[in-house]
Length: 346
Ligand code: KG4
Image (cartoon, rainbow, N blue to C red; front, side):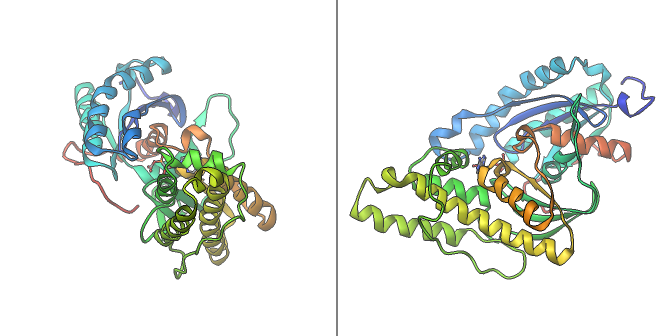
């Protein structure tokens, strides 16, 4: 380990392997030096992530990805101050690859390990700095809409380690619902980016799908998916080419309903908690309509909005590295006996 005289001497290698992306990042203080991710195209043909195939691909990718991250950062492993890793939640087989690798590397280098919660990483992605890039980071407390393939939550963020879930989905996540809508339409996987692209040329008001009536700030998307399926079944029964002819309008209308549901609860939470600093996190935050809705609410309600750069919205190791950095400053290290975990709340 190199000598640490100030925070800029802290070098952290971060590893993320919770689902189907193998990612490694090198941080120097709170600045990302490299963030290398290997995706897994193998799942496309199955229309979803196949856990066993994901673990095998992580096994193949982890060494080259870490190697590439170190090289890109211009850092040798002897310079590292700590290894941060995603401990969970995620797929057990996938997590085990990253967790075991992190333990082995930290032990061999004699440096501390830092465990990071994947969801905390998504939220803290707003604090990743880049060399030469000016960045406005949210002040605490702020609200964060965390929308991914596995989660949809409104989180009140009081500090990097104190987060309260204000509302969350009681069934499907927003990304999962969008992926299922794409699957129903016979589109590829993951469906989110495809629906986004089609929706840009469609009429969001062409169809009306039933919205959930859930109390408080919780979400539900399974009824919307069923409403979409039944609407389509009827239409396809009369015209087997219906989807192909109307896919833009179908995508735009479904997407608009998901966005309206997300924004409605977020607005209510913001009003009740009197917090106007509103951040967006998770893979679905790449969505054009959702980003536009954020911009619109900022104008209408005076929200100060925070949307991370695309590369930091989907699963990546830099978001694990930034939490690792804050924990390093607090001396919050973990022992070798910490196992991976699959399910958790913040
Ligand atoms: O955070 P993420 O990369 O992975 C986890 O689930 O942890 O999120 C993936 C989700 C998928 O459901 C994917 O379809 C969705 O994010 N997604 C999008 C877009 N890009 C990715 N959904 C809507 N519009 C997009 N442009």
